[in-house]
Length: 115
Length: 209
Ligand SMILES: Nc1nc2c(ncn2[C@@H]2O[C@H](COP(=O)(O)OP(=O)(O)O)[C@@H](O)[C@H]2O)c(=O)[nH]1
Ligand SMILES: [Mg+2]
Image (cartoon, rainbow over all chains, first blue to last red; front, top):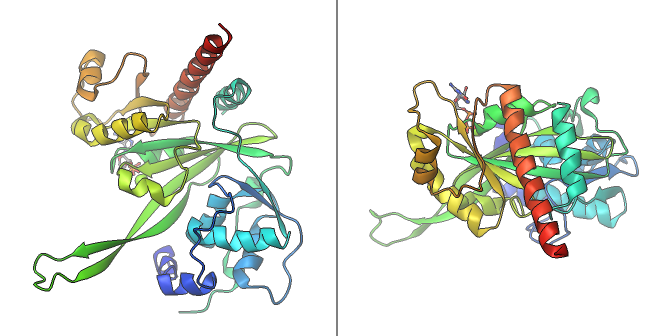
């Protein structure tokens, strides 16, 4: 199966089923780069997409990377993550504040110089 | 089509795993028109194979030929590429290549608001493609630098000509780059970060005086 065909599975009907009809607009405070880390391993009987998230987040992984690996839009991944957060199965690490913080800027400059 | 099982999702390669000590992420946005080199720049600097996220947008459209004026729904898929750079054991930087059309930006909530800043990639063959982006970033108070991507056949202008054409204040850094080169692309990100540093120290001085 080519990646293009897999994206066809992103049809609105399928996405509606995956989220039980929830729109993804309810705000659980997740950013594109909020890091998600699994707390409890996947269990038999869980929704497959929930299991996939728990599997790929054994090491910290951003919301947008989860979206790319699962080939699901971020708006859907956010809804799935809300379920896992409510059940305490994952931990969410919020992004650094975007306000100009000298220490963060210095760290990024240093990190880029080492690239 | 075979039903998807959890086995079909491979996830990140083990060598791409972030250390468990990674506490927070920051982001930089590369924005520019189609074909300007966003994906190329992201690929040049990323430590992981670049990834793509897609969002579907439903647009109401009324066909002109349609005498009844019936509203139809048109689906548009908008893709965004991104890459990743480890800063240290506790911080990771994400670099997003985002389409220039502002109507797509709302698909990813907080993309610009939550970013450290932006790089506007410019192709001198289509300078006008950048006007809208520059205006929107100013409105959103997102700090940005402008990088002119070097295409072989593209006309070359002096810095003064470019600043005038783009209506760009002297304070905003303007540089040339080759998005295919890691060194050059890295310099673009560093130019943005040094500009942010200057802005941040200026703000601190202003607050303490
Ligand atoms: N000559 C030249 N070609 C480039 C440069 N950057 C990108 N390209 C080419 O321009 C085309 C479009 O680049 P791409 O990164 O896909 O643009 P995007 O639509 O902004 O993501 C590709 O064929 C690239 O190889 C550059 O700095 N110089
Ligand atoms: Mg692209």
